[in-house]
Image (cartoon, rainbow over the protein chains, first blue to last red):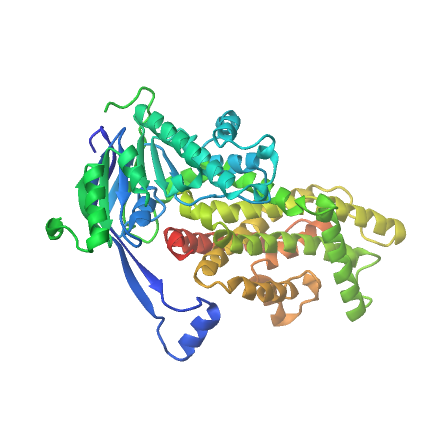
Amino acid sequence: MPEELAIRIENLSITYKVSLEAKRTLKNAVMRASLKQKERTRMIEAVKGLTLDVPHGSVLGIVGSNGAGKSTLMRCIAGILSPTEGRVIVNGKISTLLALGVGFNPALSGRDNIILGGLASGLNMEEIADKTDEIAAFAALPDGFIDLPVRTYSSGMYGRLSFAVAVSMTPDILLLDEALSAGDAAFKEKSFERMRELCAEARTIVIVSHALATVTDLCDTAIWMHKGALVAKGKPQEIVDDYLKFLNVGSLPSNYEDM
Amino acid sequence: MPVNEGFVPKIQVFEPHRASLPPLIPYIKEFWTRRAFATELARFSDKAEYLDSRLGKVWLVLNPLLLGLVYYLVVTIIRPGGTLPGMTRLDHLLIGLFTFYFAQNCVTAGALSITAGGRLILNQAFPRALLPFSCAIQSFQQFIPTIPVYIFVLVAGKWAYPTTIVPGWTWHFLWIPFILICAGITGFGLALVFATLNVYFRDTTKLLTYITRIWMYLSPVLWLPSSLRGNMKILLWVNPLGPVLSATSRVWVSGESLNKSTILGCILWAAAAMMIGGYFFISRERDFAIRI
């Protein structure tokens, strides 16, 4: 892989089977087996033949409707899901925020949860100890809240803490999914600032957002996904305009079939 | 844009698994590198469990003691008398029960660890076996306080009933770490099986409640291994904890050494549980993020 690339995605397809049964229980499985019935399943093609290069120091925005395969793609880049076909090559340490409040045990304090989040992402205790106060400060937690159980936090504090943990892990590649809706306007500006700093340090960010202004403000490239396929790649403003047109008109670009 | 100074590239390639297992050496290395996550998760889970309790960690001692008392009453009412002198029967029951619960807690807590770790699994890539492993560590940490409880009951029993068997110091006690390691590995291996099953069938843990209860009645905890006659002796070998619990009673209560067949039984069950559980779990763990 060329050295300037942070992520290379080659002809990636991710397909999985989901059960259509109301309850997946052993009891139902035994009942089905005794009646010689098969489980009702459906194959989901979450990502179809996607090829993409993301260079170091860039911010890639991903737009698309629900079910477009954005989160599945992000999880595959993070190594959480396995490709069905093709491959993903990642050059650098990844930090993720793909679900808010990740790994947080509500009974434990914010400080304890930061330690757990840091260890899960591969940091050691010394590195985490150095960062704990920085994370608490970035998350703008009121005085003393860092040592209170997370269940006492407001949803905003919870989201800000999740974001602060993800961006403070000095990642080479940061994968964010809908994270920016966590805080208020002031925190959003602060999080933009932090992401710009990460880019200035040649770190790479991939962001999935339904807030299209985020994509145009922050990203230098954007892709539009629809039903698992890549519809278009280009400058964020153009992609967002095309996507908005699609949302209003409901038709895909004429060159979609050629993609 | 040039890569910044100090940037250490770490290339990872994610491809479809050709065989159902991912490459095992990188998996084990990654598991080992992140072992601190499992130990801290165990420590914090332990802390969270007793945070809201007024008696806190006193329950770690009270729980096994009360449990031992309940079962002692049950067995003395059902089968009074017996061949063991003084309080030796209670000693056998207590240490068997504590060791059994150590392995059982590995299995029951481990079985829930994947479905309970949903957000962590959806957000980060790490060897998922760390979650049931953390439960095994927590179970061991909860087993430790039962040792002084056992010693206290042993000494008090001897004082109250002088005929109670109390083995003096013997080098055979060095078998104890071996027994505990085998119990822990067997429990962890079985936890991997049930944790995977629970991802696919959410009522697995309900069934597990009954399985573990039957498992205990079939284990040499409430009865002595020597009380089995003829074909019934097979119960000691088809039960994954049979050899470990026979060894427990032999070393802790009688202070005797282990015979070769018991040692082999402990090792074989631990190896079989790890291999079957490990294959079942690791070959499916990339599927967990979809199923949760």
